[in-house]
Image 1 (cartoon, rainbow, N blue to C red):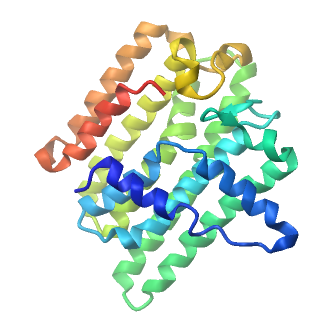
Image 2 (tube, rainbow, N blue to C red):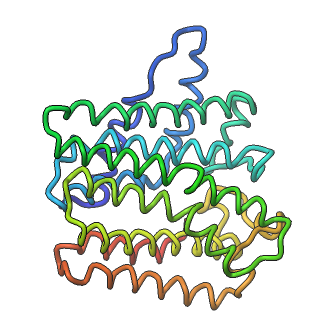
Length: 296
């Protein structure tokens, strides 16, 4: 398998491949879409999709459109999260947020455009394999996985619970729901989609689902910790907003030490889920460790 940076380079090289030119009358739309895509980012989700596909013996050239689509969905969610009606952030990855550059209306449309492009792509890709019903089924399953986990029972449900949580007494159940859907669903989706494209069996899908869910929840818990004690320059966004807005932050509710213990437990559990694959799964186990140690 390739390194994280090698997968990331592939994603960055092709990042804007699917962004259509709407013509001079609406050229600002593609400009706004590209702005948020190109300000940087970990590219964690598309890398996971490519790596999972290659791990299961698939062709990453077939997986690349799905990888780009998951990054488009992630980026659209960040654009909308930053809006005044949501988290009201001025910075994202150290740069002015989309609505600060293009205005609120265009930021909404840029997010809509990225989501629509992703949906058009993942529903169109299976048609390329119409003569191979087995492969086409895997692509259809991958498309459904991505769109459903990004939708009203997945990421958007988590965002809804996150907003409602600002006016509710935080509970362990509510926090868990937010972690699973707001964050973990969009990390689980690319892992499962990559495996589906490659035709992985049910056992591999089950094992990697546990892995992805755990690193996804851990990712959110570490975000909660970093909102309290992170370095704003490294994070590239305003910190302390969870307390200001009354968010259901794991570390605020359970305490910093408990949050750090849960972060470590989830990372260990994620790695344990892949223990049956030995050194072959080292890309994923090392990634879990690096995510636990991240500072941005």
